[in-house]
Structure formats: structure tokens, C-alpha cells
Amino acid sequence: MGRLARHFPVAGGGGTRHRPADPAAHRERALCQLLRLHRVRQRVPRPGVHDRAQVDRGSHQAQDRRDAGCASAAIARYRPVIERHLRVLEEYTLLRFEEIGPRDPGENLVIYFSTYDRMIDDGRLLARNPAEIDAMKLGTANCFFLSYSLESQIVAARIVANSQLTEMEITHCLLEELAQSLGLPNDDERVAPSLFNDSLKLTSLSIVDKVLLRLVYDPRMKPGTPRAQALFACARNPH
Image 1 (tube, rainbow, N blue to C red):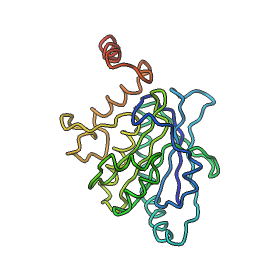
Image 2 (image 1 turned 180 degrees about the vertical axis):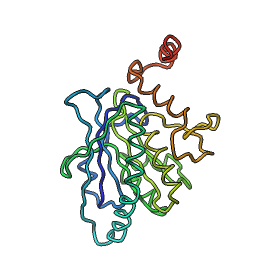
Image 3 (image 1 turned 30 degrees about the vertical axis):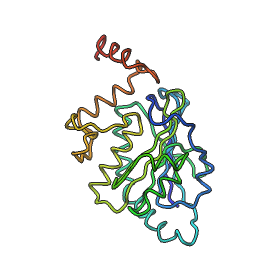
Image 4 (image 1 turned 135 degrees about the horizontal axis):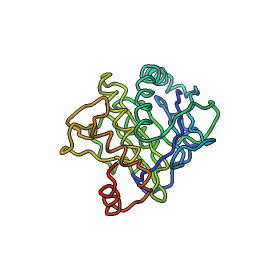
């Protein structure tokens, strides 16, 4: 089982209001085709508080060995893409990423590379409550995410990506789901050019996306800031 776990601070709130799923419970499940990311809750990076990432390999049950091979291949192929996305997201959110040892527990952002016919089932295993996946009515989605918040702060997210997509589609999906899991969960066809316009398949952040990420992680935007207060803060000092 390939795993990439990363820890980073989070500002915005989003997703459901459930507690994050127990990471230990996830490690007991024989899921394959995955990358795992970890996020800590500090608002802004501080000296001595490091964000962490890990890579390790685990074993699969016999029926999952073929998929595990696909997982390792997908992870190896798209690791540079994920690294590039993370560097860009760091720049516009003040988040930081650093690799950690393979035994460190506690990942709370998970990326699973699945196949089209297994995405829904893998999502159910990842979710705190499998019914969440059914409620999402995913249909023919090529990738999707779940996020969990506590006291208006994002504390966990789960991303599932279809490893059978083209390289361009996976590059787009990974960036879109990572950005959405950081507090910008919705698509809007009125916003263009943007990663969050589903009619476009951008593989890099547009100027609109950069502004939105800067806004979400602006130090004035405390977790749970009401809309009116956020608009007032922006109007008072747009820089």
C-alpha cells in the first residue's frame, strides 16, 4: 500500500461538522491505490511547529495485490504533480509541507487513487459515515472529496481520484480537489477562468484562484468568520 501523508495548518472551515475519522481505523483497512496527506490545525506556521509528510509501503490482502501494483505506479507517476501542486498551494495559503517517517500516525488528508468501478466503494470505506457517499450522488464523477470540520476549522479531508483518467485530467483533478479540501468546496460556472469552473479543466491556478486562496487564508479571516464581517474586512483594507 503506497502512502503519502502530509501535515499542514488550516484556516478555513468547510465540509461537514463531524469529527475526523480515526486514522488508526483507516490503517487497519485493506484499501489500495492511495496517497495519504495529513494536516495539523495551527492557523499560521510558527518556529518549532512543522508540517509533516510521510511515505511508506504496506501489505495488501491477496485479492488486492493487483490493485496495489496499480497504486504504486500511480503514486510514483503523480508524486511530482502532487509536489508541484503543494508548492503552489503553499505560496498562496502560507501552509508548509515536510516529509515525516513511515511510522508517524495521524494523517488527516488522504488521497486515494482508485479505479472507476471502485471509487464509490473506496469512498465509503474512507468516509466517517458511508451514507455520506450515497448522499453526494456522485454519478459519473472522476474525482471527489469529503471534508470534516470541528469548531469551524477543517480537521480532515478525503480525496478519491480515478487513476484511469488521462494525465491532464488527473493533474486537474488533484489540484481541484486539494484546493477544494482547503476551504473552497464549491464549483461555480460564473467564475472564469478558474479551477472551480467545472466547464474548464485547468491544471494550474488562475489569478482568480490565487486571489480566492489568499482571501481564505488571510490572517483577518479567522475560522468561522461571518460573511458580513469578512466582506467588511476586505472593503476596509483590500490589500
